Amino acid sequence: MKRTAVVLMLLASLSIGIKAAVRGDVKVLEATDTIRYRINDFTKNYLLYYLFPQKIYLKDRLAEDLRQLDESFRVISVTTEDAKTKSLLAYFAYEKTQLNELLEKRPEKRDLADLILMSETFSEGADTIARRHAYKFSENEKMFMQTRSMRQGMEKILKYYIAETVLTDDPQLPKKLDKSIKRFDEKLGVFNRSIYRDGKVLKARERIDVSWRLAEKYLKKKERKTPLPLVLNVGGEHIESSLNVLGIYYSKTQ
Image (cartoon, rainbow, N blue to C red; front, side, top):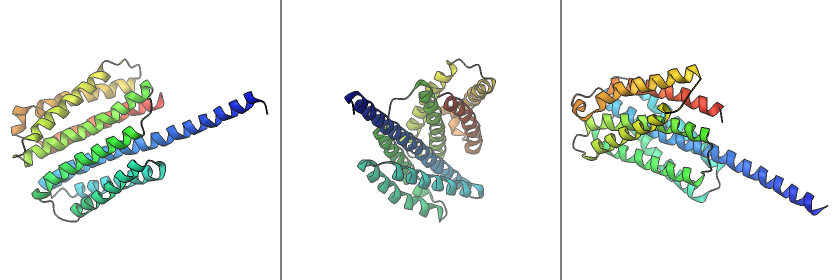
């Protein structure tokens, strides 16, 4: 066989390997995104469940968050060969047993601070895994990931907002909330500066902007003295729904 043909075959095999690696990385990155979202959603919902134990539907949402965490762990486990990632998964699995235990008893205030810390640890671990499976994004992929990041950001805002009403002796919560609000606002600015011709996407962006501006008024420090956790939670869900529309648009144009 001629040398040129051998080289071409080698390059083709490398290309297949690279494509397979990228596909695996995509799966892992999607799973880490789900981990961040679901752990923050679980924490937020658990705080709401503590405040409103009569809202039984919240327990179903908590159970779904845990189910989605398990599925994300499974996807990463069967996709990656990275030793550090597998080590983090073992840690996640151990920590999740504590989340299961929380769901089996009535919410208690003494568990809330630990739960918030755990949610931040999970997010940090997911960030580490994501960095170990990162690849160069296209512009549309960057925007798609931005919509996912904003969904997580909304959950963090709601988590800190509700936690601030319960754990009034924690001086870090207001700071974390203000920082999360600022980050969300900065990311929204990127979409507001983008040009869209798709009517559905334009409406979604407008809904996000209007809903966020309304929510932002109640998130200001002086307004947080009279918290509205359920109202803000519903508003956050509307924003996340519209962010999904933007995310679908960018996923289709990749």
